[in-house]
Amino acid sequence: MVLGDQVVFARLDVAEALGIWRHATGRIVDIVSGADGAEAVNVQFEGHGLLVGYIATLFQRIG
Image (tube, rainbow, N blue to C red):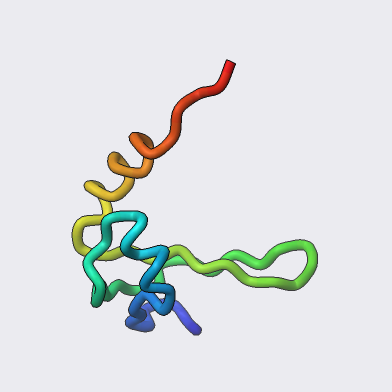
């Protein structure tokens, strides 16, 4: 994967849990290499701001 590639969620179970429509597509905006050589990608897609707010409501602080 490279910057600008169009992507779609491969894990529909995760997409549904996050409230993302099944065929949400986005573009890769950043690629981060980890110390172990693994890469992580940041994806921007329509509705991203809504999702960020929604994720915060999925968790509660313990203690």
